[in-house]
Length: 536
Image (cartoon, rainbow, N blue to C red; front, top):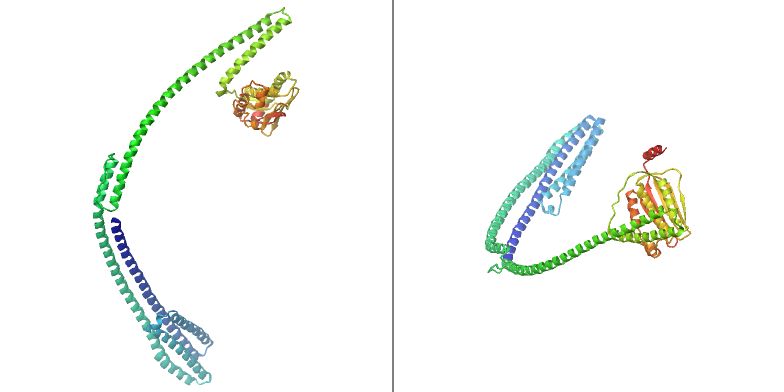
C-alpha cells in the first residue's frame, strides 16, 4: 500500500518535471528560432548598408573618371567595381543561405529574394549605361556624355536605386524589430509557464508529503518502540501492526529476529556451560602436566648432581694414578703399563659421562663469549696443522699445509678461530680413510682470506649437504663409521664464523672426500699496515 502511494507520488512528480522540461525545450527552440531571425535580419541590414556604400563609391569613381579622365581614376573605378560586386555577391549568398523550405512560403523571404534580383539587374544595367556614356566621351561628345550622366544620376541612381536601398533597409529593420518583439513575448510566456509549473509542483509535493507523513508516522513510532524494547534485551516483546503494508512486513521480520535471538542466547548459555566444563577439565590436566614437569625437572637436577659426583671420582683417580706413576722411580714396564691401562679405562668412563652431559645439552643454545682483537691467521692455521699431524699419526694420514710465509691479519677471537679449525681437523681425522691425505690451504682473494680443508674420507651424501650445519644432525654414513658424536661441532663452527662476519661452505662427494671452506674479511688496509709496523 505504501509503495503504491509512493509510486503515484513519484510518477506525478516525474510528470511535472517532464512537462516542465518539454516546455523549457520548446521555449528554448522558439527563442533560438526568433534569435536566428533577428540575427539574419541584422546581417541582411549590414549587407544592404555595405552594398549602398560600395555602390555610391563606385558611381562616384565612374563619374570622376568621365570628368577627369585620369589614370588614377581608372584604377579607382576597377577597385570600387570589385568591392561592389563582392558586396553584391555577399548579399546574394546571405539571401540564398537563409532560404529554407519554410522560407519558401514566407512572404518576407520572397520579397528579399526579389529585391536581390532587382539590385543585380540594376547594377548590370548601370554598368551598361556607364559604358555608353564612356563611349560618347571617347567619341568627343563631351556635352552629350555629361548630359547623359546627369540624367542617369537623377533618374536611375536617385530615382530607382536609392528608393530600392531605402526599402530594403527599412524592411530588414522591421523584420529585426518584429523578431525582437516576438522573442520578448516568448520569454514572458515561458517565464509564466515555468512559474505556474513550479507552483503546481510545489503544491503537489507539499500535499503529497503531508499525506505520506501522516501514513508513516504511526507505524514508524511503533517500530521504534519495539526495536528499543528488543535492543534493551526484552526478546519476548513483539511488535503489533494491524496494517497490510510494508511496515507490517518489517514488524513481522523484527519479531522473527527477536525469536531467533532468543534461541541463539539459549544455545550460547548452553555452550558457555559446556565450555566452562571443558576449561575446568583442561585446567585440571594442566595442573597434572605441571606436576609432571616439576617431577621431571627434579629428576633432571638429581641426574646432573649424580653425573657431577661420578665425574669427580674418575678425574680424582686419573690424577692420582698419574701422580703416583710420576713419583715412582724404580717401577718396571709392566707397572707403568698397568697404570696407563687404568687411566685409559677411567678416561673412557669419563668420556661416557661427558657424552651423557652433551646429550642433555643438545636442546640448549650456547652463548659464546668473544675476546676480539687483531689475529695473525697464518700463525693460527700453522699451529692447528701441527695438532692435526699429532691426531692423524695413529691412522697414518698425511697432513700438508699451503700457506704464504707473511702474516695475514683479521679481526677475531684467537681461541674461537682455533676451536673452529680443531672441529674441522678432528672431523677430517675421524672420517678419513687410513693412509689418506688432509690438505689445508690459506690464501688471499681480494679483501678476503680463504681457508680450505680437504680430506680423503667417507664424504657426505648429497641429500645431507644442506643439513650438516643443523644442530644434532649426523649423516647415516657418519653414524655407521663412529657411533659416538653429538652433531654439535659443525653448527658451533658455523655460529663462530658467522659472528666473525664470515661464511663457511662445504662441497663433498660420498666415498671421495669433503672440502670445507672458510671465508673471513681482512682487516682494513690502514689497520693491516699498522699491525705490520707493530709486528716489525
